[in-house]
Image (tube, rainbow, N blue to C red; front, top):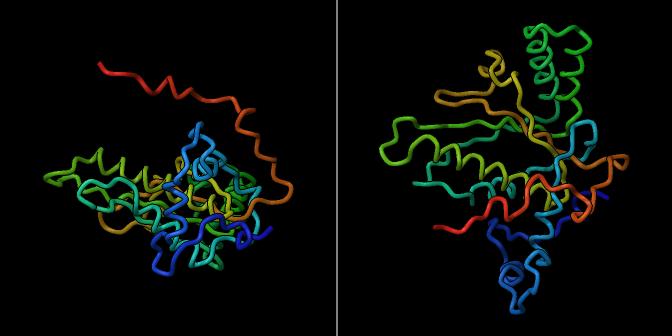
Length: 228
């Protein structure tokens, strides 16, 4: 099923949330179980899906703009926007693949492993380089708060992609420290954090486990504690 038929939430032309969606976020009825709220059900169903399970189509310009709009809603002290996304698609995937392959060779991998790294760049319909733009000397917002803003933006971006019917995964590793890749993506004061691979989940992709069948990495009670 193409993502265009999977879009769950209507979005206005100015990327503001339309009235009908706003009312669904603030329902007149009370949910006995908050986890049954339809918006939370979408968020709880998100999972990471590797590049080998992604096929065309990837998100188009309108979908990417919507994802970016949601990313910008993340908490961001002083509205510094300490993050950027660089879009790689079409013929640019070959250039990224060449950079991945050379990074693998520079790291001492054999040619077969280098080709495998290159294939990761070629296979994803859309890849986004994730960049941090941290102002280490900001008088109000320390660096750790800016990194938190980046993480929130990334989470929002991936949640929006999922809500629009796409699948993907955040990737990082030693390649982010490879000088040629840093030079290819980073401007002054920017740090390469990793890449987000996006596309449509292949028909042969492993089915998502129902929420109740997943082994949780932690329980809500493990991370929520009363104080004092």
